[in-house]
Length: 152
Image (tube, rainbow, N blue to C red; front, side):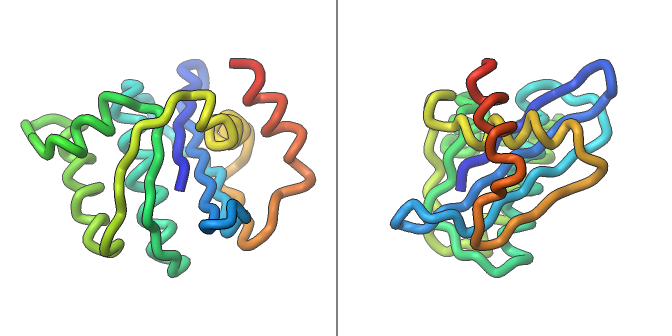
């Protein structure tokens, strides 16, 4: 599962982009979700992880790898140190959602390796609520995803 968040400060919203592929690289599920609210970058990335894990659990997919380009968030998840802030509250949510996935490994990837999730997150800023695709690639928006991904 690759996850990313995009923030639009003008509209006080964030987009969540998630793509889950199998071991062969075939698309199993895609989520593009708009969330209303203003969040810091690290809080938005953590919220995107929580939303994506909850969604993956609800559709019954087992995850082995979770990849994000948010280095601070990945490091916080690997360190497991929690203080008391909105960011840390969301980290606790993510930790609790890990219990639904027996052997999930969290990995930091560079933005280049997270282009599709990034494009989906940017695309999600323009949707009303959420769009979901299961076991197919979203052909109608594929060009938008690619275009958004290249305009980093």
